[in-house]
Each structure stands twice: as C-alpha cells, then as structure tokens.
Image (cartoon, rainbow, N blue to C red; front, top):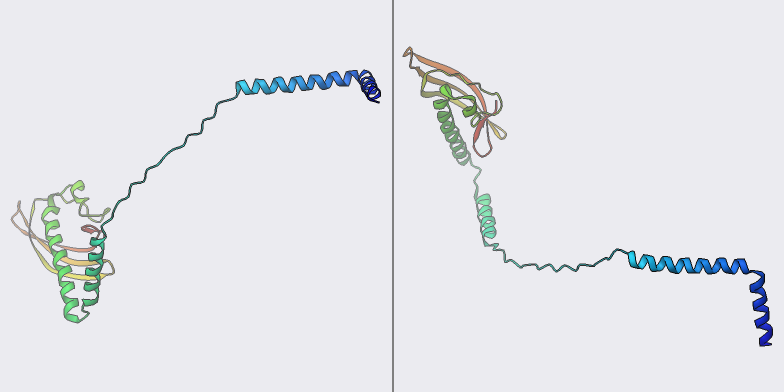
Amino acid sequence: MNIFVQLSFFQILKKNKKSVIALWLVLIASVSFGVYKNFTAIDMHTVHEKEVIEQRIVDTNRIENFVKGFAKSYYSWSNTQESIDKRTAATAEEVTEFLETFFKLYPTATEKELAYYVSGNALSPVNCDYVFSELVNPIFTKDGEQVKVSVSVKYLDQRTKATQISQFDLTLEKDSNWKIVG
C-alpha cells in the first residue's frame, strides 16, 4: 500500500508538472524577497528616555498672608459717607498730582513725550513757551473706572508775560499710571 501511495503521488506530479514548477518558483521568490527585506530593513532603535522630576517646595505663607490681609481689609471696609469721602479725596489728590505734573510738561512736550501721559490723539502738542501756574477749580466726576475732569489751567506766557487760562475737559483712566484717554 505504501508503494501505491508513492506511485500515485509521483503520477500526480508528472501530470501537473507546470503547476508544481510554478509553486516552487513562488516559494523561492518569497524566500528570496524575505532575505532581501531582512538585509535592507531600516534599523529601528527604541529610545527610552528618563525624565527626572525635581520636587520643589512652594512657600504658600505669602499667599496665605495676602488672603488674610485682603479679607481683613474687605470686611473692615466701612461704607459710611465719611469713609467714601476719604477714598474719593485720595483719588482726587492722586489725579490732581497727575494733572499738575502733566500740565507742567504739556506746553513744551513733544508727541513722543505725550505718549506716556496721553492715549491716542486725545491731546496734541502745543509747543508754546508757557510756564504752568496752577489748576483752577478742578471738578472730578467718577464714571466707572474712569475719572472725568473739567479744569482750567493757568499759564504764564513767557514771551508776552500775560496770563493764559485754558479750559480742558478730560477723561482719565488708571492702568499702571493715570492716562488721559479722552
């Protein structure tokens, strides 16, 4: 029976000789392609990075003190008319100082120097030989975050020795410092 199986197998091979050769060629081609790919493959290296995280101790004592101080100020803030007047007076004093500084420089200031005090084209340079004398009857009105000021400014004209009074209606806003915005 063993001989019969061998004979029938070889007989089948003889009949399908072309198919068997084709299959051998496919097998040889695939093995050759595998060997080729193995030699021409791009080496891939896995890089393992090690990240060291440093621990920092954050001192929250300053934050805690700030919050405690803020809470104390917030809850002790009196809303009586006297305390409101004090806060308004402090703002008016600060704005007055700003205006006096500004109007001392304004007559001879260049456009570049005015940019520090004036936002946009709220005021243009005048280039006159005036000397600041005083602010006359400033009226301050708080409008949200802005302060509107109506003021007359007394100047002494150095050329004619006459007193020059100019009227200004200004809108001031405070960022890091006071600035004329309108």
